[in-house]
Length: 156
Image 1: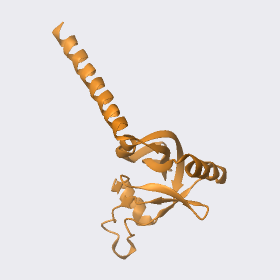
Image 2: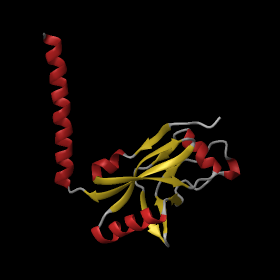
Image 3: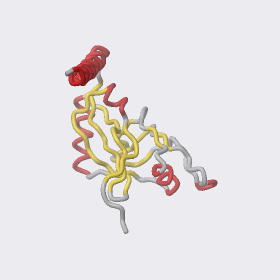
């Protein structure tokens, strides 16, 4: 029986801290057998990775998938480039935006969808330091409001 639904593997929280994510795109990823087994164990790090177009193909660079412990000689290089699978028209559209508007392609999530590994790629624009501080201040204010709201309910 084929697994159905979405099972999250990893999220790139640093991408949301460092970039404004304008839009996202789901892409398949080409993996070896031991990489899939490591993903199922959740042993992946998206933090310093990015996607780039090389020779008309989309590649994910800098993603770390830890070697599978029982993989012996069949293990993979943890930091190798991995090919992403997207439709040609999507690739041309993304490439145009990256070239002209100065966007970057960063992975935001990785998950299994119906048993296949997928990566969510975000079209991102870099944040300045004051934007990062502003985001942190908003999050802190929301947290304080939530705390005050909970405390207010308890007193009555």
